[in-house]
Structures are given as structure tokens and as C-alpha cells.
Image (tube, rainbow, N blue to C red; front, side, top):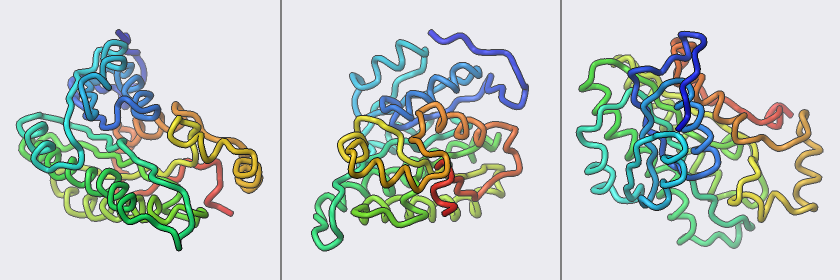
Length: 251
């Protein structure tokens, strides 16, 4: 069990419930941990109860399993669940390969999770936020692939660019209810999902040579800006797509 920290009241999540999808993944788990440290009542969401056992045991987060690609499952899971924050962190990388060899079965799977799934969660969570009348904040975990071209990433880039578009529309529509919506656009974090491609010497060397900070990000370096955007410290920030990329997209 993680004991909440005492600190800046702008980062106090006491009496706030935050839903984190992809909670069993590296970035999702880091976000759950940090939110728990700041006193949030965290709902850790994933595809199966078993996938959530470790993170819920560690942090005291409440598990919630549902199929992100099925609207009935998302609606049934989220209807009547009062939340003041959402992190759409669930993601699927698909297959890295040439545009001329795109597998549209994989393309559809990537969009089903990264774009459609996030929109489904936003749809039903926003209804809860509006009904609750307390406002809230939503953070979508996008990617630098939505901002600059990455070789072989057509499907993934499309899914994350779509997610950034959803972020802007949601910010525009939900602002009247006191709900802020932002994206974070991380560079590569060396998770198991990314290691098979980004860990290869011939990929890693040229990529990092173009990044001002010259290294991949850690999970905690992504979780911290996510929690900032959920917090009162970001009360006037909405509709933003924030690169967390060591300066890669500045080139």
C-alpha cells in the first residue's frame, strides 16, 4: 500500500477519483503510483482482473476490468462510476513497417485501442463528470509520432494523431462543464512493447543522435506531467498536446 504524501495543496488529490486505463502497463502503473502518493482514489483499469493484481496490491487502487474495444463493455463498466479525472493510457503499438506493406488488420486493431478506445472511455467518463457537477480533467497519452514523422509508424501515427484531434474537440466541448482535456506526447519509453524495435542498435543510435537530451524517457518522467495536467496547478490548461520528448520534435 502506498502512503499519500503531504505537499503542495495544488497537487492534493484527496477526495478525487481518477480512472487510469492501461494501468498494468509501465506508464500506466507509474501514473497509478504517483496519483496514489498524492492521495487520489485510483481506479486501475485493464483488460482482465489478473492483469491488475500487482498494481492494485501495491497501491491500494481499485481494479476495474473491461474490454476497451467493445462499447458495451466500456459503458457497463463506467456507467454510475463517479470520477473527477481520467488518464487514457492504454495503448497498442502494432507493427513497425513500410507504408507500402501496411497490414490493415493491424491498422484496425491499433485504432481500436489507441483512438476508438480512448474516445469510448472519454464519452462515458465525461457523462459521469458532467452529472457529478465537480468538473474534472482528462489526459490522453498520445505520442511524438502524432507530431513528427517516424519511419514505419503509419498506423501508430494515425491512431495518435486522431487522439490529439479528439483531445482538442473534447476540450472545446467539455470546457463549459469545467472539464479540462489535454494530451501528453511522449518520446520512446523503453517498455517491453517498445524494446523490440527501439532497443536495436541500428535504430537507437540514429534516433537518439537527433534528440537534444540524447536519451529515452523513463516511465516516471511521463507520469509526472500527466499528474500535473490532472492537478489544480494546471487549472488554466486545456486543449494542449504537450511533447515530453527530450526536444526531439523541436528539431
